[in-house]
Length: 221
Ligand SMILES: NC(=O)c1ccc[n+]([C@@H]2O[C@H](COP(=O)([O-])OP(=O)(O)OC[C@H]3O[C@@H](n4cnc5c(N)ncnc54)[C@H](OP(=O)(O)O)[C@@H]3O)[C@@H](O)[C@H]2O)c1
Image (spheres, rainbow, N blue to C red):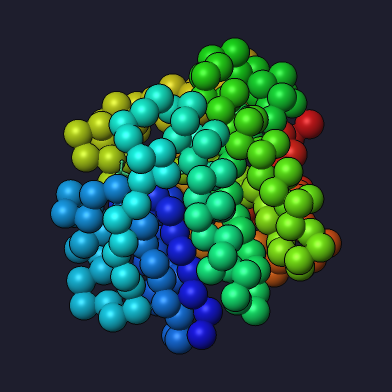
């Protein structure tokens, strides 16, 4: 039976992964969250679903800087799940990356801002690539996957309005500076695309930075 572990499953893209994977027949989903009681959106979505197991887990173990969550979080999560994954027939690890971590995006989309976030995602991309190379001989497929721009304001609680506004500002800024249209998608759209990519992963994809629409990430260059 395929089993999936979603780290950071309480809201945003993570909760949508739980929803879509739980709707597949014959699957088990382990939803790893920092605070099960306070994960109200997840609790509502998972109510009555016998194939969803909510498990407490914090990738940095203490309240932390964004750097530690984004950069060290994937390393800690991959390390923690490795023994379990080694016992499985299909060994796939997917780290949700961001175009922000790719230098060409900053140039092509004209993104001088979000410097700290971009640096953390670049670090995670490199760390994930190192894991991929390290685990290659064991038959693992380890990738970084860009979800595109996703409007997660519906599960952002008190930050909801500010998040929706910042996405609109980002789209408008990219459009003004480059003429490109970069519109946020819903979590449903993005995760459906991401799962298609994950389902189709082959050994030859190991170590790549892929995008949710398929193929290697590119910044519209
Ligand atoms: N949304 C986008 O447009 C977009 C674009 C490119 C890349 N991404 C990437 O996609 C991923 C998810 O983004 P999102 O927009 O869905 O974010 P989000 O809505 O802010 O959700 C973040 C999730 O991470 C969890 N989390 C935070 N710190 C954690 C920790 N120390 N240990 C375990 N879980 C922790 C949060 O749990 P709590 O509820 O406990 O805080 C929450 O479930 C991120 O890696 C982001 O960089 C997003």
